[in-house]
Length: 159
Image 1 (spheres, helix red, strand yellow):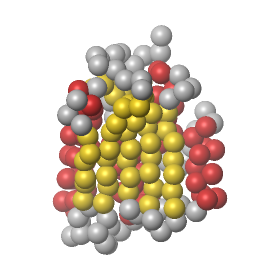
Image 2 (cartoon, one colour; image 1 turned 180 degrees about the vertical axis):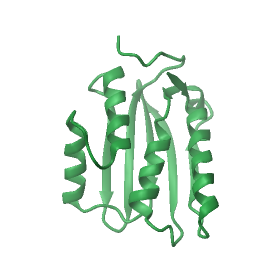
Image 3 (cartoon, rainbow, N blue to C red; image 1 turned 45 degrees about the vertical axis):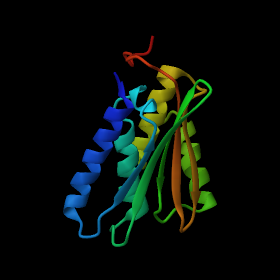
């Protein structure tokens, strides 16, 4: 099923609150989402696995001032949701390997959350939508989720 972007962001905030409860150094969250875009619908359980990926892979021990920024904007008939962290980032080789794993429809032992989100988006909306990654070693990673603009809820079963 789908939920509003506002609900998805609230779930992501709740996840980060739980993580921050366990750490002395808190992970900050910055939101840049237009109130009109908050009303749009996205797949349920889309942002939380991406946030978890940042916490586990980008931040490790969360021992310094880490942060995540969630942005959303519309480009024509697309909703682009960006989740950017300021963690350790990836080398070009690591980025290419992860991108390759995400393009395949086989089981992945690592980054299952990213692969799952990407596959669900593509199954429901088609190959024109999904996740794109950018990363710089030592500077962080950005995950850009491309979705069709939807102003009403939909059942995410493949039709």
